[in-house]
Length: 342
Ligand SMILES: O=P(O)(O)OC[C@H]1O[C@](O)(COP(=O)(O)O)[C@@H](O)[C@@H]1O
Ligand SMILES: [Mg+2]
Ligand SMILES: [Mg+2]
Image (cartoon, rainbow, N blue to C red; front, side):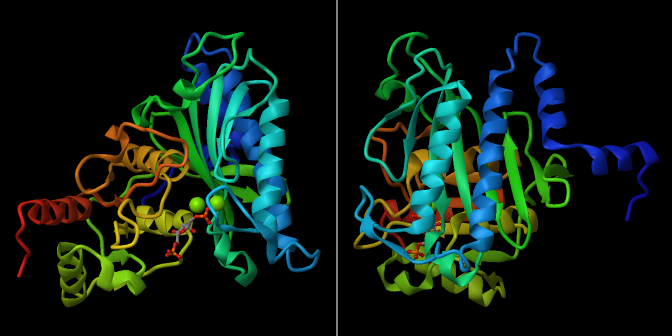
């Protein structure tokens, strides 16, 4: 372990999310503080969801809602509650003019056309894990609007493309609760300290190892994957890589980013575009991956270069350690030329 100076330790132990955001944003002379407030609104809503997640089994918050969302997926009670809480926080905060959410079909207006930002959100990711006390999360993506302030936001504000995100992040409700975000100058992670009610900086400038020993994929669809993905997986087993798959994207992504590994949700025979949603799952995690030195691809191009077409668009997703992602992309290029690795 490298020896840290007293000053370094004090910074590590003592930096609250609020203080960090303030310090980070004050480095930008023209910053108005609105993005800082927006990040704080998300962090606050995350605290409320965290409380609901923790007591779900005690207060009748587990289980299905008995209705489907716009994508035909069965909604859990916490999906609905998380959606309400985040929308409320963003509507009341004053910095956001419009939102898109996994749980709603179109744009949700905040009745504040003066808000500078728009947000795309997956309020609760990994909802099939809620009832079994396994890590779940919230994923968010923030853009500066392109429509004039004072007018009603529209689709163009959300269709800017992943490289235009001004910030992205997630909250992981796991064995500890963490908020991980980036505003484009590295990724920092904050662990929620219950006794203080504060997120405290715990992982400064996270870096994803260039190579790793973990692969994460839903093996149940093996027969439906492209032959070159199948070959990659067979080869991964032969090489002795470790297979880990939670089924909560946010948890799988977090583990692989810290330890080094790859997450794949490729196209299948039944779902030619895969399952995961570009705007509020893949763009934000791809933004973080690149900020950490990792990479993210749909097999043909970097995720952040995909031109978006609609709010709930899906994409194949390969993300993690850059060397591993590069290997899968190379394998998929062989599929385009019609060859399969022996
Ligand atoms: O069960 P599958 O097909 O492996 O899908 C798991 C994936 O689906 C998701 O649960 C989708 O997210 P939601 O729970 O937000 O719908 C991801 O978190 C996860 O990685
Ligand atoms: Mg999700
Ligand atoms: Mg969700």
